[in-house]
Image (tube, rainbow, N blue to C red):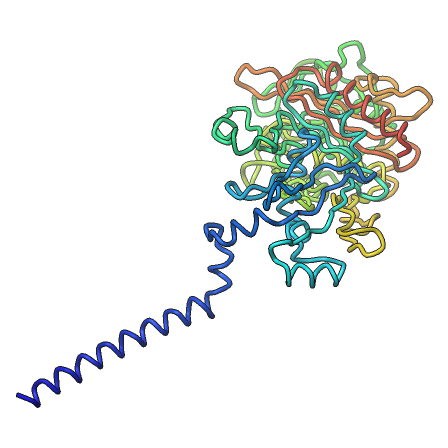
Length: 496
């Protein structure tokens, strides 16, 4: 009996010991191995409480104007935003809904985990309850940003403005926007809003570009040496590609034009023909553009033309998300790997399955202004105070060479011609040469077209490049181009 009781006690002690071992191993795992993961979980109440106490650094525009700041309210810090139209740039910092924009991209500096000042870093580690973040200074110029927002008004759309020489993004207007000051109260309504106010249209929006894309088609033809700005083209009829009719409606008053004038007057027929002919080995023969009646495209396969078209579209960044401080959209040339002659013809004049962002089209314009090199865009200049700041980007970087210098010079002259004599005339600025291209992008479904304008000023040196889109507004000449002119003129007045 005594032995039986002893065995039971032994087994019980073994079970208890094993239980303690399991608990010890569990505590060791969660307190040592997985401690960082537990601490970083957004649901960790200690982390949330700590986050609410951090006095985040300010977000400033390039001239020191405060865009976001924190103030102590009792023991907690309250975040406020002075210019809500920049919500897609500054983003928001919420303990409930997370972070976005610059608040997210440079969170480690803004919350003080990283700092250029070793003394501040040590203070933050020792006094976690009084953690102080570093300021982040942006390339945005709020003076120009206000002009861009006013130019868009109540229309849905976007404007992107870039310093061609440095790559600094000076303005990013996306409408509609939201007010980050009232985010938590308005989240349910905003997240269900069909106008998608959380989408930063300037860098994430995806749109068919219409005739603004002819800058890519013609750059390819000129760079390949299969077109010349001065070659004459005569045509009156529509172009029919495998039964699909492309109407000759953009310049009914003109029948004989140069290649440069076809660009200025935005001829869809000529650009469809250019796209179909990119696989040529010599100058494109535009003779078939003047038939006595409509005809059917029948030149065999278009594989060589498609390959060259894809190459140049990718050089201009279509299908590649621009490297940037914030998330950007890649766009696409087509929805399929191969393209039929009809798809190629439509895409060549900016329709088809094309998708681009306003930032991508602003970079395309900047590439021509910069002599064929695409500038590397960036948004943040530095983190920290002057004298002890961390430089976040270096100005003047280049993403890649897109076309050769002579091609860029020829395209620049064609962009100027478009403003001086054709559809982009509303972009004129007295005494300043301006390069530009309009677009009226068909969207189907009976909806009004998107109004587009891309351009730059001045055209005789690297200045500011811009893209404007107004969703379902109509004519690019009537609506987007005057808006672009206002922003370009303001940029020049500000000394860019």
